Length: 314
Ligand code: HEM
Image (cartoon, rainbow, N blue to C red; front, side, top):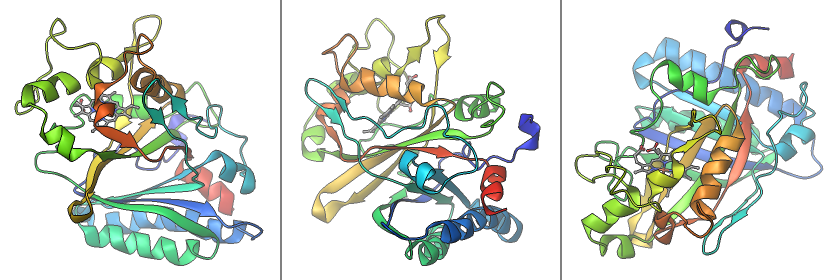
């Protein structure tokens, strides 16, 4: 089957103004298949219904399925090649932790009302078969900045490249149009970050803060975030992912963070970036952003096409 025969989920959408992220874990000893069929139908329905009724809301719902869930659901296709339980990545100082997750939902819209309605309808079905172990309401911060004040997303692939880097391509007939989704919730030490000079913050990221311009290579530190996440394959081709990170925060509790979310045509690209960040390149030369940011969750999913979800309920 060719790509044209597939209808992907909206993995290439741009980050939206409002987002709800949620992670669900199936309850034990319960029949999950019937309710899951209903969830698949809802995912398809949301995307079609909002587009028809309220196109200005730009509402979209993307569902990812984890490794354990793929087995439990007895999916009609074999396990995607690079889907696994995320193995924690332990560096000399910081760890990319691995936390549970059977289903991940990424609900985006220009209006929070649409995210809320999608979340409510999904929860009504899911609550019977799964526990929600994390739900984060995130928002666009000023001109697309992360909560640490730097624009987040500038070097994302644009146009046709988004599809190329976000979705499995022609190399796999079976999974073409699907995507490897990886998420991490980071909490920032805002006190420490805010007491760091802007010049030093710029050396942490490798870009200038106000202008969002990249530092020249001869000035950019090798342990800056963008030096370590800009990677190539052995033939010198750039390896990229689509990032849709957004800030979240409860200022009164001091819980302020970034919800990192990426879509990729293979997980190994994201994994290599994580190794560079946490272990370092070379080993020990880890990402300085981690001295201000702690990963408190980390899980991997596969995002099937809408056709694959349709096959499940067929
Ligand atoms: C670039 C923030 C985690 C991959 C950037 C930039 C910022 C940023 C401000 C520069 C502008 C841009 O191109 O987007 C953050 C924050 C994170 C985080 C606040 C969490 C605390 C991650 C993780 C990965 C990653 C976990 C990969 C697994 C990238 C990539 C780039 C980038 C690929 C573009 C590098 C380039 O080609 O210049 N990030 N990031 N980021 N980040 Fe992150």
